[in-house]
Length: 84
Image (cartoon, helix red, strand yellow):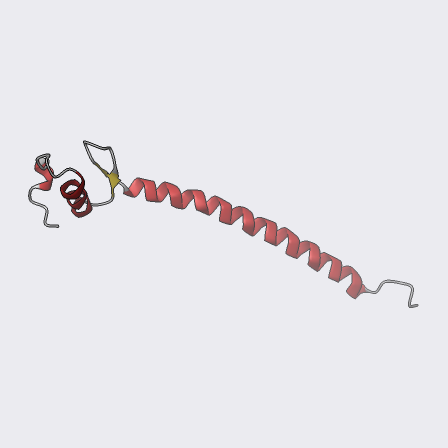
């Protein structure tokens, strides 16, 4: 009787295979998620500097950038009323 593998032995192998399959599936989902985050971050950059083409997420950051990187250039009209 000891030579026959018991039901626990077969279930153990199924468990290992199931864990490996699940790990592979989760790794694929993580990889997919990373691309989505990059796309979302890029979509959030809606303001573009007209001089150096740098992209920024909000007008306050845009004004700070413009004042520090391009001090000799007059501010664009859309940044005049923004408080930094």
